[in-house]
Image (cartoon, rainbow, N blue to C red; front, side, top):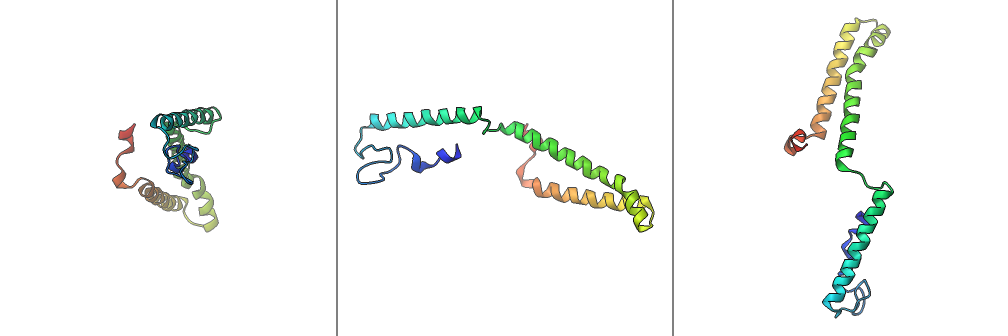
Length: 132
């Protein structure tokens, strides 16, 4: 619908050529004729919207937000579990204590997630959980 929301495509838009509007109506067309053209344009927009829904081009905003939240939660959980999984391998490569490596990695991952949360959810935007 973005491509049809252009005001230039409106049948009620200003004159394109000498005395005619974009829809081919003369500049002195009756208000009834202009309204009929506008009604037809709205009907076409409604049909395009239904067609876009049928073809799966439109997406429900709440479903998209739920999917994003699910993916982000899974990524956060994977990142939080990563230090425990790899700290032993890294410690063996470096010849240091595994617990030390895990502690350092966990701190850096926690810092990374905090920075990302601040960047993607600035304080001025309000509480997202209150919107649901």
